[in-house]
Image 1 (cartoon, helix red, strand yellow):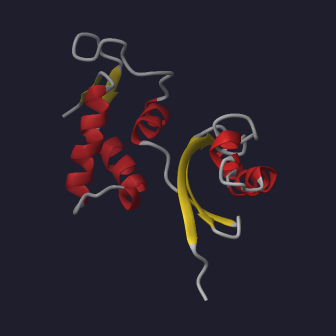
Image 2 (tube, rainbow, N blue to C red):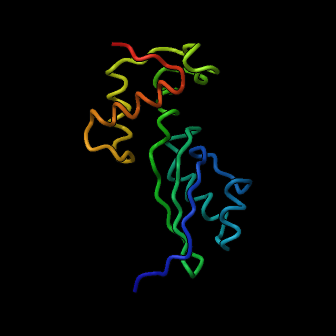
Length: 141
């Protein structure tokens, strides 16, 4: 018999560095989930992504057990990692934070494809390019 779903919680935590402190503790504590168990399991599964922001979707069941699914890092994090940037431009459109090539866009789009609602690789590249533009990053031809 399938477990009855009580709640779904979406969080973003740094890989291998989750702690019971906010946002994890309050988000899971209000549903009666064993926070220490989640933190241990999350950190074990994200050791290879140490320090990178990893979105996680937690399904909490009536018996207070839980299951979670890891997603790919946000597009902005992947872009900053690929271009080795600390942050995007403070004033996008006026000030450039860098340039991204079509090859880099394609690499990021392939990594992120499973989490995007794009029908093709070209559509995924356009989504990533839009994120890059909003960060003040110019597209190289």
